Length: 123
Image (tube, rainbow, N blue to C red; front, side, top):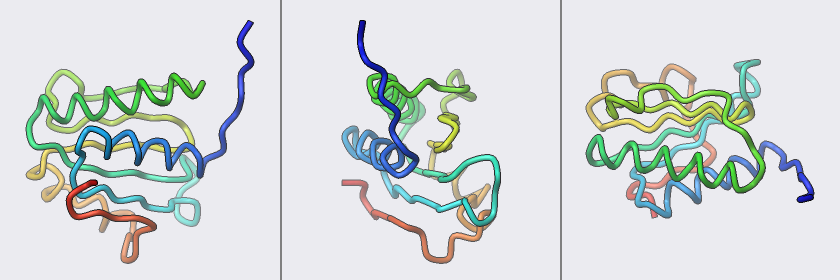
């Protein structure tokens, strides 16, 4: 029987960021939501170049989380691929096409003046 190990929110955040960068996620931003939300500790936002890329990014996050013993609480938007949300409880991941990201401006919504981590090209 395999041992189940619990990873903390910061480790999960790092796992998600690494997973996104592994498959060339663009403009990866981490927002520490602990001061503004009780629903999660971190939001991670990334862009993909196409609907297929967005789905691939979300799939990589799900796979890496599962391998680390972290179940997904839900996934929304996989069919369309314009915006996929992956809820990992401590970390909520938004993978979006650039046009959707520009329209919804989640960084502004959550007050991310100075995000924890950011990357212009993801890798």
